Length: 193
Image (tube, rainbow, N blue to C red; front, side, top):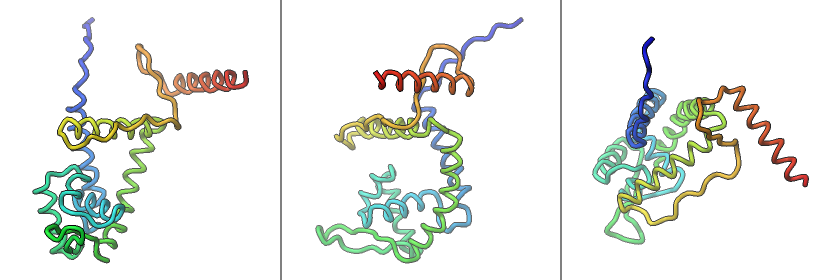
């Protein structure tokens, strides 16, 4: 009989690196044929949600180096997805805004992207909210380390599912459901007192 040894966990940054690569691959596959690729979808999403932005703002919001964001923006402008205008608050800067074609492609790409997002969220189940918070917290920590933010760190979510921690083997789904039911019963009993 051979003995097995526990494999030490991989570093958080390495796991993030691998997950980021996989997310990029899944995003590229989902967006195939939509008229935009992953980096372009990130940019049109930011501009659709937040309105016109400078190269630096797009770079910061998408986590992309400024030269890379600038290259994408110029390419998207040539493709007719964006329009570059002078920034009225600072004539030395330019801002980019979506064109009608940029909005059309955003909406076309949003359908397959949302389907992929929903499938991943469904796979995460009750953990989706905590995973989202953990990613926001990690993003904040890395931006702070890089000197990009002084904002307070994101707060833990208060609603949603329970997070269970213990030192043993992972619980089966049925066991986790029993523990959650007990927690709910206990909280209801404590609230009734």
